[in-house]
Image 1 (spheres, rainbow, N blue to C red):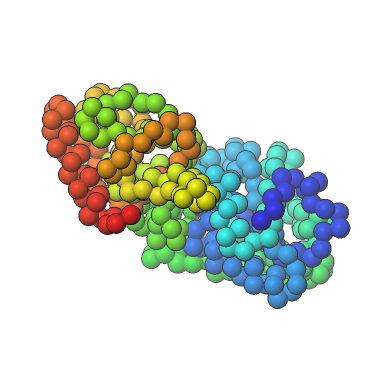
Image 2: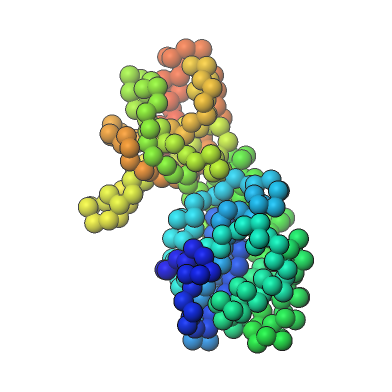
Length: 316
């Protein structure tokens, strides 16, 4: 999938597009119900499917609280490509863009740049300065300018629709199983492996200390069963090397730590991962974070955490 990072990068002779617009943080099942319809509509119209997303998050520019992110822009692009989206336009969300009127947004982005013939968005989609535009206005303008609009009903998730906010809440609660159900895949965080305090190896459980970006949604403190993924390592063929792991999130209260960390112990392995970029996937929360009265009871609990992890994950 090709990525454009500004309006200027879109070729002047770009052909007809079926467009979907949104932050699409996490590319969860609710998003996928929209995106799959965009891909189908593009195929039916012999057009290209284009997703317009934003960087930075619009909330940062307009002064609203910025949510913790469910994935990086790079991961978003990968997931969109897997769904069959042809192009991703990352629109730099500046103060100027935030002040475009709804009509200006349509003309500058959809008509003049992307030559839009059809738009697929969620039924709650808003756009333009102070979010003055909605799907009703979009359809009305489309009638005048020659494009159609498909407003997709939001996918339900029990008592409320599946949304990035709903998934963030589940993650903050440590309910990674529910988050995975909403995402359609295991939730993960990633970053480089950096040096920690080195306490794990003497206790028999060497851990990879993963430096996760500050703007990332990290599950609640506790111990989790999951997987550590080394990117591009499997068989030397460019695939991922995915290994079962017991994962600790917290400040290491037994040692009076203050820095919140994500640490993963790969079962039955002592790997040199320093400097590598890895991904940690969460399957199940085993327990909350506890302060133990010394190292011995901590080691006993870690042994039980590893046993339960092994039972939950089964063969790698």
